[in-house]
Length: 189
Image (cartoon, rainbow, N blue to C red):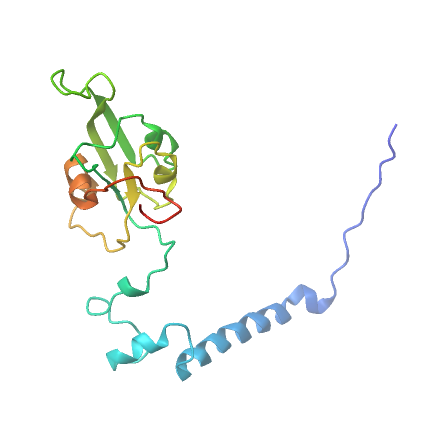
């Protein structure tokens, strides 16, 4: 039989119980960042000086579009190929992997007179609820046909929930056309 060892939790002294040192350390970090911002040495302060109104970005007039990092993940959109065919083949992998269940796909058939009718299928309906989307990028990574992309768009607004439910037509409209082979982690070829 294995020997059971009982471990005793270490006793905290009075200063550790009051956690004043931890509070002072956090306040020092906050004051350091505030001082950097006030002296203009904070990251991005050069771009904000042009507003003439201090350290705050004046949002509608100034935007982060030119300062977005390369790895930024924005809102999802569908793309077509060079012959304006839908790249999406309704495999529904993006729907299954979506953590907040923001994607809903209803598969449909391609008309019999289309030359691709026996090879592929396409979505009858493809909806993304942008109020639920968390911009995680899992839909883009799992897509075998490279039909869904996260574009560099962060200002998605609407006056009602219905405007933030992007249907297939709107997703293709904002996604555009991708020509040639696309290697997601390399340059577009």
